[in-house]
Length: 116
Image (cartoon, rainbow, N blue to C red; front, side, top):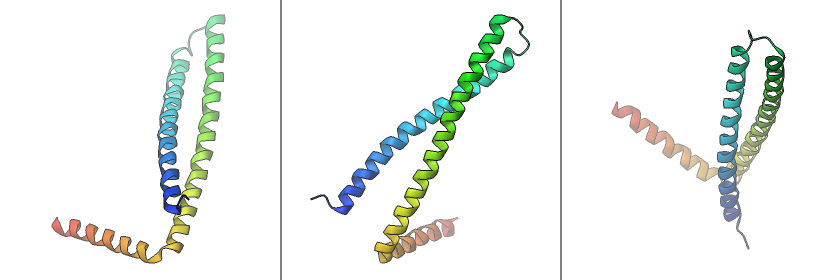
């Protein structure tokens, strides 16, 4: 039988891997947006059928990337809500642990501030 904490550890590991891949994909998408916008600015003064077609393709690609970013934003918001809900449940299930951890964190911060 998988314990609750074992399941949470497994879910946390999976979430970490997914978050890492998600972060890399997001950075790649943002770079594409920046590159595409720079290319559009660079070719804005160029006339001709080829340049117009290239700008149209770039604008379509840019729109697709922006849609991916909106989807990513929605996913981040949903994950944040899930994390907040999980935190809320944990605090309600383990109030004394949370109080102890908070007190310890406060003491550490107080010590660090006092050292300066």
